[in-house]
Image 1: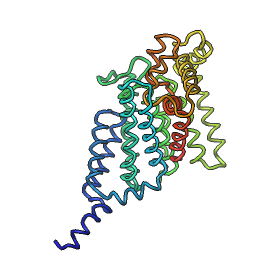
Image 2: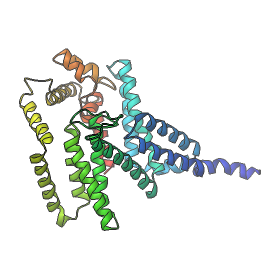
Image 3: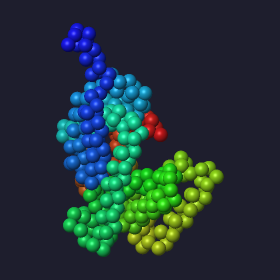
Image 4: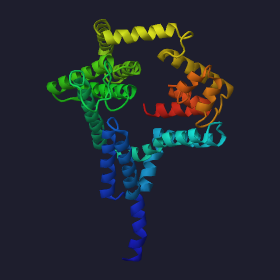
Length: 354
């Protein structure tokens, strides 16, 4: 090997990823996306393997140049840097600080993920992997109504499968969005009808088969996003009217959905009397979080400080026990820990994804 080739080798490694390792990292990432709705442990294992393959593949210079123009990746890094800084002045317990840093470290995985999914073909494979996992979830959830299956976590009237009911509903709502979008891009009428049918089944699953009202709100957001970005302007109001009529029909004919709605109204009306109801808890979490933010509005109480500070202002020990993990609202959770600065960076992070 000549001196010139020796000099060129590091430059090549820095600018061009090793093809086999680069492709392996992509395949492992697709596997992680597939397992994310099905099982956390295998998903994290594949994420770690994908990150290792990505790092070993090289091509750092090219990848860094690509990431420089990615606002979402930069905002993710900025948010994690804020969390690291917040750990320095946090009033929280050491274990809570470590847990928060470990949880949000997944933000950094966006760096390899964005470069690995830069090509449209790989992004399509990622969506297909997620959609396949959610299709399995949907089928098993629906079958569990009439056929008790050994691995179902569901209880009577609440047929969630691999995750808890809130996470399943959020993911199922995103599955609805994917299916709706594909009704507009499918090449054949049969494919469009298939995607529309799956979107309807997934919507029914969220509204009538799985408990929790978070999924209902997510569905409203999904329908709004689809109407704004995918439905032609001349048909937008017609689509929204049809969605509203479908919602009214489900409300009229689904005892489960109607009972959940009526329970939410009752709990809201009794929020000051019964703070331990589902709605009452969330209102109290929001009140106490706003109080904590007002006490330290700029930089907050620090990373991992929410459990300790919430229990300091909670009205009862029972409320402390129930609400010390998280205020059930990402904006409030970040606001308590990192103040308005953290909320601003989080808004930039979300806005960059539009």
